[in-house]
Amino acid sequence: MPDATYPDVILLPVHNRRETTLGALSRLGADGVFAWATVLIIDDGSADGTGETVAADFPQVAQLRGDGSWWWCGAIRRGMEWALARGAARIFWLNDDCRPPNGALLCLRESVERDPSVVWIDAQTPSGWTYGAHRKTSWRIRRCTSAEEVRGEIDTFSGNCVCLPRTWIERVGLPHDRMFPHGMGDLDYGLRLRAAGAPLLALPGSIALNADPSLNSSESWLASRRPMGEIWRDFSSPRSFLYFPAWRRFALRHWGPVWGWAVFAAPYVRWGLIGLVRPFWRRPRNVN
Image (cartoon, rainbow, N blue to C red):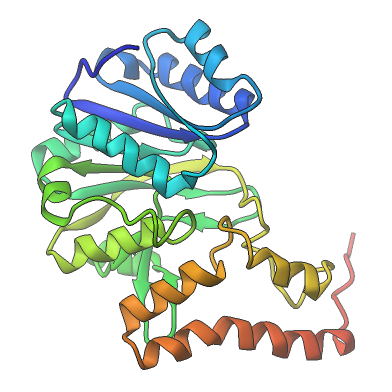
């Protein structure tokens, strides 16, 4: 398996979407990334031949293989351990369904090399869902406005396309994958970095394209045609932002042992209220 050749290591956590992963690697190659960064695939138990195809088509790409129990945060943690043990100066998180503009990853590296901040590229999906900077309010984590980003009023960030300098990783440690296996791991890590004093910045002038969330996280519960029971079952999946165990831990950790329970319950109470109202609510008709 290739070792870390460069001081920059790009981590791609992947699972059972071979063509998406191969497309991501092809874009990295076309963008010249292999000339300055080591790329590590963390394959969490793919059964569709992802690892074998990557090894054949991209022999310069390093791989770690899991058994399907790592999820996103566990894969990222193991990738970071691998990169740090090999002397990485900067570590990138990059989801394989995230498409940064050409040259943007190199701009990330240069930005962090000049000033050891944590820097990312905002991303937008076809449905309009956005990933990037977030604020922690008294009730929730919400997406920052553009003005808040410009003013640096940022508490945490999404993990789709991020560059982290080694100095801040060593100060705060690694992601808590056992507490937050998937959906909340990036937000928790960003809050830890912020609490330690790390500057958090979005790379100006760059927007990545990203696939829509797999569990319809951006949908309106009121406008959705999905049964409310089906939406509730989503909360039992680690992929969900409201996965019961992870959201409970997140709420109690970041809002405290008293108020945290109210924050934890709030979205589920909202689900119940919407369930009561939705039978009497008329969806707007499409106007051609």
